[in-house]
Image (cartoon, rainbow, N blue to C red; front, side, top):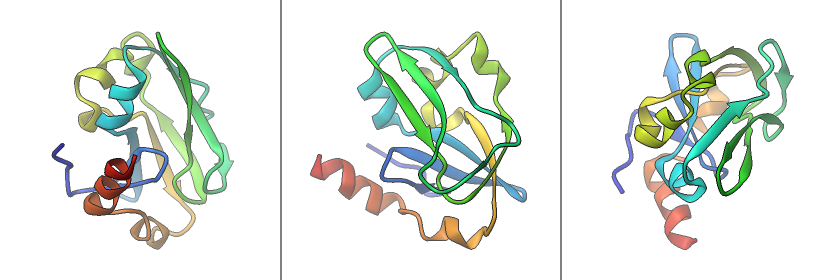
Length: 126
């Protein structure tokens, strides 16, 4: 698997990419592959203040439902409304489709997340 190197990754299979003073958050290709065909993305509350690891929202597939987590302490500032009717966009291009935007309390916290090699090692370890 070829991972984009312009972002960070979490151990819970989210990717985090800088977008001005906020960060786009999505799920990795590995995560969407494990979930299968996505049928719903939601329950994200814009304006919600979250701590790292708190549930930010949910993705549901024909096989399972999975929570998405706040990568670091901060606030949800946007949800990708396009996904309301087209959650399968994530299946088609997981690394090109952000799910929510997040403003961290401390942007330096994002630097402490996994880089591509660290995430790949996590996936390889199973």
